[in-house]
Image (tube, rainbow, N blue to C red; front, top):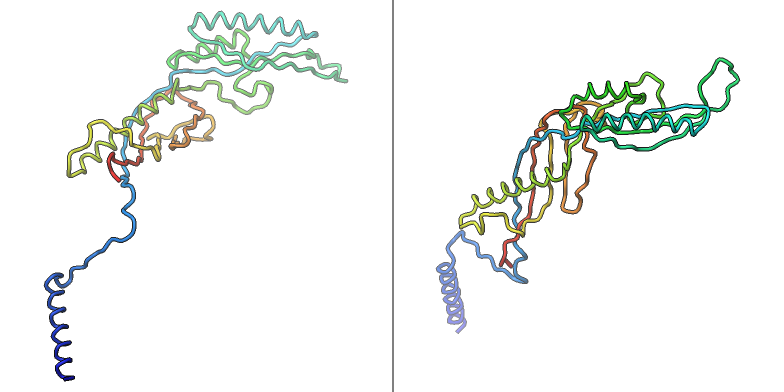
Length: 271
């Protein structure tokens, strides 16, 4: 009896092994998914772009000072000089921007040889022109008309340290960068569509694209007032932060920018 039972169990084991070998070939694994379905499907897209841009505005920074025995007389002289400068700038198709006006008073000195007038008024100003204007000729004429302080540190006219007098600025630089960003987005979408085995959902980039990083860098080293030397001009925008930085250069040169962008994409209809 025991022999019969053992033989039956052995026969059942052989049948089970044969069935498993027939349904699952040797070496092939079988994955069983349990739990919740897979999460949302996202894709990461990258693209590049380029543009060339030149400054639009030349700015001469400085100031004029006027001194007198009485404050009112000093102010009157200063306003007279400003009126002459304003008339010249209008003829030269420029614009005058008045900044701070500072009044100073010199304390009496025990040195009888010092004859400097006690009251002084200093007016800081910007003279703005198109970037291709003859800035050296204009600055020379402004000096003849009374411009006697240069750069932004107009309160201290002494010393031997040099100060940048003329800077060049981009007009509405953020709009230029947004156009560059659109080029990068279009390039990223085009590259993603080319890599797909099926048809691209649309020719134009869809609204589901979300910005992660947009980095822009100049291909040339540039002199800028805050750089301390020739350096690459580089900055990064993110979806949460788009900062505006001072857009000034020390020369009127064409700048070539290259941009790289990283986006995330969740196709419509995907779980």
